Amino acid sequence: MSRILVIGAGGVGSVAVHKMAMNNDIFSHITLASRTKSKCDTIAVSVKERTGVDIDTFAIDADDIDATVALIEQVKPALVCNLALPYQDLNIMEACLKTGVHYMDTANYEPRDEAKFEYHWQWAYQDKFEEAGLMALLGSGFDPGVTSVFASYLKKHYLDRIDTLDILDCNGGDHGQHFATNFNPEINIREVTAPARRWENGAWVETPALTEKQTFDFEQVGEKNMYLMYHEEIESLKTHYPEIQRIRFWMTFGDAYLTHLEVLQNVGMTRIDPVMYEGREIIPLQFLKAVLPEPASLGETTKGKTNIGDIATGLAKDGSTKTFYINNICDHEEAYAETGNQAVSYTTGVPAMIGAAMILTGTWEGNGVFNMEQFDPDPFMDMLNEHGLPWQVKELGGPLAF
Image (cartoon, rainbow, N blue to C red):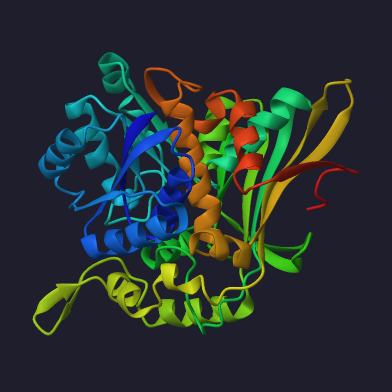
């Protein structure tokens, strides 16, 4: 049993602390903190009503290292679970080093002034965490996170060598809004509008955003258009599985979403550089975030399912070439009934809870900075089945035709 501090009170933070409260044999004491304490208090009420567990709440500016250090020293957690914005990853890692506490997050660091998603800033902390005898677990969400564990599970049980890996992320949900994002709008739009990159034959291949499209028939969702994107697990998987010849990431988008996004780009609302407005600087994308629906508010109206998984082709255990598809299907309405949040938050918040459990129980251990695929996948996969994200493995007739 261990104390945990969760920073971040969006949909993912809400799901994570609900699921932690449902596993109080592991999480003996839960503290939730964010910039806006009232959000934490609202989640605490829901947790109490649904699980009977009390959690503590605090206000924290996670950009302020000294304030974060003071909060950690007050709470005395064994682990800080960072579910705040990716801009704050390095500051929270610094606070963990200063206080001697393990660290975990769900998304890699990115600078505020450039849409650049790379692990090198966090990997640079390897020696500091190793020398401190601390563990930092990066990317314990779904993608990155579960998709990386899916790959290591296939590598352990089905394929001696992975040659090609495609990660397919489909959200078949409908929230009834003209335009809204299913997680933080600022992060979501920065990610979607960035150039697409894939790893192929030992080099990065870059193409303009949203220019490579394929159609795929997703089980329990149907046929959807999916677009090639860059996602950070490509970087970690190509590093830890260097034999993989090609890694690609695909995400589905509806035509209406893309039309709205194109208009917003054309009028400058997705810019991340400052502009002058009524005598003060504002960031257009941050203003857009303020007027779009809060993702945590979409749970009550969202219907449909997500379907996220990996398709891997390679050398099978019997010496032949085989293709396997491993995926999870999550229902938005079922996720909302359990935690008050839609499935996009649920599929990230549950793996955050499981990653924290891996650390706190000592199931995964080590000194330094680690990605998900560096550990034994089996205990994590077992907990996915036990805690709301069941998965399946199917053999396909061959690799994707495109």
